[in-house]
Length: 323
Image (cartoon, rainbow, N blue to C red; front, side):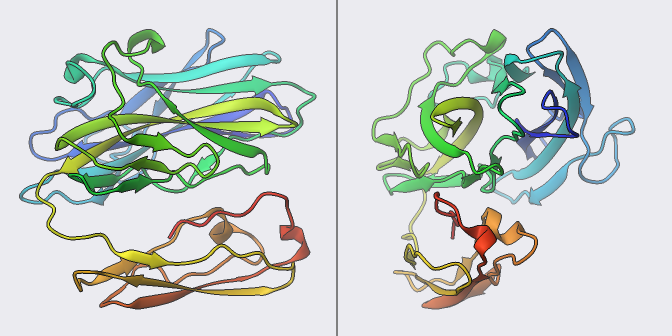
């Protein structure tokens, strides 16, 4: 659940729930609407607003298919729900959404099909904080792992107010926002509190696992909000290939410099690769960064990240781009 301030009041926020769900001929769970709970006693029914019209009652849409189903694997659909809410005053509020089902057979959640799916965002509201919007997560939580091959996921979170961000591993929650009894984090899983890299050194056994990443915003040394990413990782036991290798470097430049950074991928198995990039810098207005997306071909494959910087881009924290 992400949020942004709308209007001039620091107490009026627009909340956006983004979910990624399975699709396929045997999948029956599909949510035309979801209910936001704002932590002050108020609720809001939000109709799914992305994708085409279909079997959902208007104005709800059907969601956006981002990965089609195959003969061996189900597809994935992205769903977006939004509500605007005005709080009566300052305070700390836990905004949450509850769905009655998770997937069946999640390895680290006992009896997962009967455990509700729960996500929350904790927001601190105060007229003294000034304008505040929550972090935006640019990398979708769609990453598969291979048995005992190093796995890395980064949410690529950016704070639009330039607040500092930190990351922590959380616990999956269920009904009433309680920690799920029996939930466990597999051995070898770590989360870098500065970069946000979730690393699993040797994923095993094969199957589905759920992880929670807490993204915390800090202003003047005080935590002012936290966003929960509850994501599923499927460990594939039939991987026979090795991951591609990226050659890219951290850089520091003077404002006004044109950044021209080559990004090269090689593949140890000589497979074709596809290069993509995500990050807030691609959405800047004016002077956005550029990268040729979805460039595909044999390796070594190189594409250039370019960005004409300006004095307006100067800040203490680095800009993060995920290739």
